[in-house]
Every structure is written in structure tokens, then in C-alpha cells.
Image (cartoon, protein in one colour):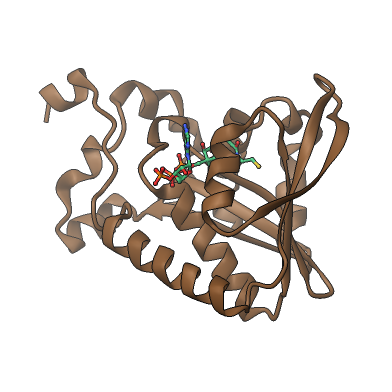
Length: 212
Ligand SMILES: CC(C)(COP(=O)(O)OP(=O)(O)OC[C@H]1O[C@@H](n2cnc3c(N)ncnc32)[C@H](O)[C@@H]1OP(=O)(O)O)[C@@H](O)C(=O)NCCC(=O)NCCS
């Protein structure tokens, strides 16, 4: 993630976490990029110019015209962001701060791509333990984490102040253990084979498709 990505990250963050983002003003994203403990990545499709060079004309079908127009103010970066993820490192522990995918782009492997990428990065940075908190009711995110080797390590009752929802604490105890390394290898291969780079995500929209 770079400073040029912040407008789109801000929009994706606020769409994904409407309650929590109350506590995340715009300026805090820039501070996070300066924070040596924080590591943020983005998942994106390259700029249209680069796409043309790469001969991938599917970009215009990626999202609906309406969605693009609604978010038009947010394109400072040349790339179109699909999602982002970040974690903080404290000693040998990485704590996942956020992982979010644009709403119309979900269920197409992008969340998995982001999660595999931050786990890879954490492993390279000599992290051993990975932790995170997730809302009790957020079963889809929990399913994703379970699939990637996290287990439920505990609960924080009434952790979320907006609705007093419990937080579920999820952990990977050792991302360097044989089982984790093998799981990451398999998920990385799956992401490359089936992920959005191999099969660009489509959001069906009759108006945009009809015009293409
Ligand atoms: C959680 C989130 C990042 C997942 O992103 P995504 O791109 O839709 O996820 P993927 O398509 O890569 O799916 C990965 C796995 O997550 C699980 N999953 C994702 N969405 C799911 C859903 N709606 N129902 C059940 N499982 C789901 C599945 O296990 C899926 O694997 P599968 O498709 O092979 O079954 C996305 O839903 C999101 O941005 N949500 C809002 C923000 C959020 O809740 N972040 C997590 C907070 S801790």
C-alpha cells in the first residue's frame, strides 16, 4: 500500500467496517504507512494503461458503471483496488488489523489472496504467532480464517462498542510448522490457479455489459 492508495483504501474500509471506521479518520491511514510496526498490502487490478499493454481488455467489465461512477472521486492511484489487508508486528506476533474486499467483488478468491499474502509476508518477517479478532456474527470471515489454519482461541465479551457484540479471538500458533507451511503452499497455489489474476473477477451488470 502506498499513499496514492489511501483514497480507495478509505472507501473500502468504510464500506466494509461502517461501525469501526468511525474511529479511523482519513489521516490515520497515512500515519499507518509511517508506522514501522504496521504492514499493509493491497489487491488490485493494474491501471487501464498498463492493462492495455498487458492485453487484458476485461477491465471495463470488472465493475458496474454505476459502481465506478459512485466511487469515481477515489482514484488517485492508477491501479483499481479490490481490497486491502494489514497487520501489526509486536515481537514474534502479527496481529491482523483489517482485511476487506470491495463488496461487489467478494466471493471470488480475493480475500483468500490477501490473507495468503499477509501470512507469507508475516512468515518472511520472522513472525511465529498470528492473531486476530473477528465479530461473533461474522461467520464468513471466520470460515475464511479457519480454512487458513486459524483456530478459535477465546472470546472477548461485548468487545464491539457499537452493538456490544463479542469478539472471537483466532490464532495460528506457529506459521512455520510443517502443517502450516504445507497449507500455505496449497492455498498459494490455489490462489494463483483460481485467483483474480488468472480469472478476472466479474460483477454482472447488464448496462455496462450491454455497452461493451
Ligand atoms: C471476509 C472477506 C474479506 C472475504 O473476502 P472474499 O473475497 O469474499 O473471500 P474469498 O472469496 O477469498 O473466500 C475465501 C473463503 O472465505 C469464506 N467465505 C467468504 N465469504 C463467505 C460467505 N459469504 N459465506 C461463507 N463463507 C465465506 C469461505 O471459506 C471462502 O472459501 P470458499 O469460497 O472456497 O468456500 C469479505 O467478505 C469482506 O471484506 N468482508 C467485510 C470485512 C470483514 O468482515 N473483514 C474481516 C474482519 S475480521
